[in-house]
Amino acid sequence: MTFTRPPSTLNPMAVESLLLAMKDSNRRTVDLINGLDERELIVPRKRNLSPPLWVLGHIAWLYDNYLLQRSNSRPSNIPEMGEFFDDRQVRHPDLWGLDLPKREFLLNFFEQIADAVPAALGAGRFASPETTFLCRMCIQREDMWGESLITQLQTLGLSPPKFIGNYKPKPAPLPTADINIPGGVHSLGAVPEDPFYLDNEKWGHGYEVEPFSISPAAVTNGEFIAFVEDKGYDREELWSEAGWSWRCHFQASNPIYWRRTADGWQQKRFGHWRALNIYEPICHVNWFEADAWCRWAGRRLPWEGEWEIAASLSPHSRERIRGPKMRYPWGDDPHEEHVANLDCIGAGPCAVSAFSAGDSAYGLRQMMGNVWEWTQSVLSDYPGFTPDAMEHWSRPFMDGAHPVLRGGSWVTRSRSVWNTFRHFCFLDRRDLFTGFRTCAL
Image (cartoon, rainbow, N blue to C red; front, side):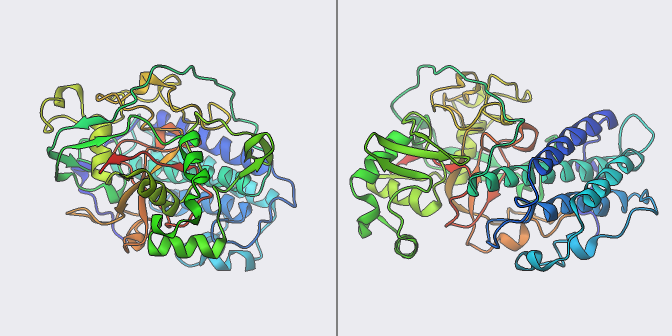
């Protein structure tokens, strides 16, 4: 496939910065793989899991296919691995039938690819615009695969990776009432001047909304307990038809990783049960569960355009919705530790009142980090959408069946999420670090 972005829309980046980011992502990938024993490298054959060895090889193949081969800088001694790791050819259900190479071989392959990347970026101080984009795209995909591997550790009840930190943010006063956002026309999506964006964010376009009111924080465990104890999982009238079918099929009676004991509710995190913290956001709920809670509470999920408006309006846009947008809820400056729960700086989601330094211009808390937030919107193409080099990443999922998630989670890398970033997955997945905030009807 040809590269679809006109050169004027591509932003060159310093080679040194690209390599630092790549090496940081590589280190986490290797740490995750080396943190597994031989038995843990083999995972059950399920839709929401992928063999870790395949993930390792696939990440290396991404850099090889999209960066090295396109720049004609692929060393001849690196083996062709597309038959194993090209996800355009190998279907997910077939991953468990592959005769994958051993861990040591794949780690060496991974290292060889990484060693060849500097040559692909060129000898100048800055990589070319196209090469910059391709490298950043591979880093972003590696970061997201890292989040997927950590999600698998949670799913399988395995130990967390050793690089997870112990940062403990302090709570801060938080408004209890909804925050009112004025109606008007806003630009939804990315614009060419943005530092980086993926294809499903193209292009920014006018988005008109009525005034709406949105909660200042995500729904908490304590708020979700009230729904559970009011027999929310047993009341068909609170569920969509598809949601009720899912609930009955899986006999769900509370969020996954929850259990009730004589001492109260507990939550399992990486294989260990602990008392449920009622101030943390509800986590590991699917779209059906979020929708049912909203029906019970007389609320609704935000549309993704509403979410983006609430997250990205700059202080200069408070009086009228037209105006400059911010890259992140807190402004245009990159993430720092005190503004959002990202990058595994802590051991999991934190209280929804923490990280007040990262508030949006309207005072919404934690619109980035902690938990991914469900929206009402399904992934669809924006006006002017054209797929980029990794064309199969989002276009096949614009089928009306994949709700959009916004904001990232505590596991998401800070360099790989921003206000216009659109994540997506199936309605029924609750293994991800997903929660939600709500709007008034």
